Length: 163
Image (tube, rainbow, N blue to C red; front, side):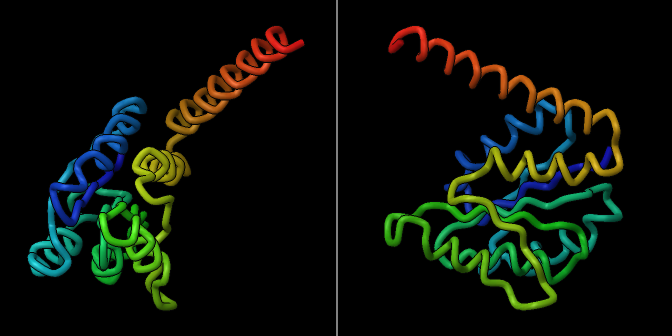
């Protein structure tokens, strides 16, 4: 199975990365987590990305706040799918990161999930990998069914309580 790379712009993004790691572990998807800044370590970010496919990666998750150029820097150096996760900051509550991540120029796409959406980024990465992995696809379908069952159980409990 291909690996998922999780690249954070700063170690302050770790709580969001941990959400992604939890999901990847649940699905037994191999991963690596690194800190590479688009602005302070652009050469290292580019080197990692240029070699990502040859090193067995199938998807890259980029987690960054504020200017959030990391996703675009990564996407510019690979044709692997890149999923951007904007992070909340103390200044604009993550809207700056969201707009920086989602507003990529034509030809350099970065799929974007919600601000702080590490879990959804990992699920999207799993769905991408599942296109060529039947076992992973079945695990994702089972999770959807489990999630559905939990919601219906909650509905039944509310119906019983409130009539």
